Image (cartoon, rainbow, N blue to C red; front, side, top):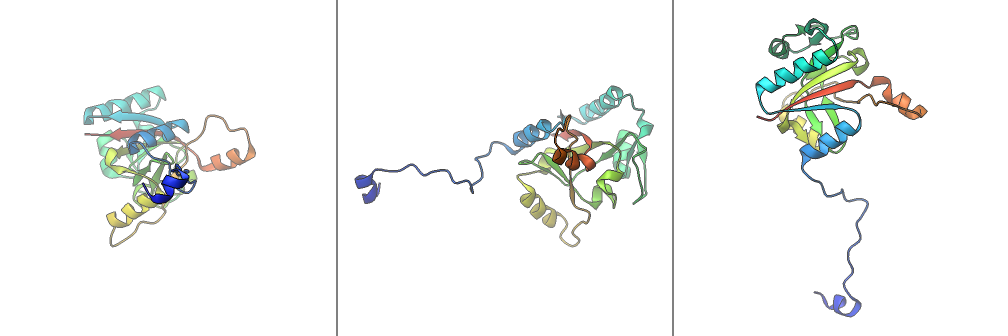
Amino acid sequence: MGIWNKFFGAKKPEKSPYFPDSEGPLDLGFVKKFTSFGGFFLYNDSSELVLKNFKEICTENNWNQSEIISLNQNLAQRFQVSFVEQASGKLDNFKAILIHCEFLISNTGKILLSNNQINHFKIKALPKTIIVSAKISQIARDVSQGMAQLKNKYINTIPTNITTLNIKRKSSNDKQNQEEQTDSKNIYLLLEDY
């Protein structure tokens, strides 16, 4: 205890609005934000459960697996969906697209993507439902940390078409929310932790 504290009493430091809130676990922070915006989250602790949950998503939405596409050949084979090689144009005539992601952003609940997942497509050119397959190790605290990890992941060539997915909210009353929703999608997240 300093001498000034003895004379004037110790003041409890006020919380600065410039310091971030103390955080809990990143995964829980992400899930809370993601689901609060209307994202559908499915936790998977085995490869079998991932495939089972994927089939349940298809059943729930009355989709055939032929109505779902992927731009990644390995992902298409794993989930037995159609593989599409095209790098531009429109894909919104399909019911859903299955993709990987770069990172899951904990403080916003958004999903960071690049050309490695969506080629050179704009988000609005993709189907209205996006199913994301991700691992728990892909959670980043914020966009800044996600971008730093992205630079470390791709040392020689930083990806292009870096963007985040916006979740389609159930209801939007004001004009600003409606404008923000133009590129928004229904998003299912198959999070793997095994």
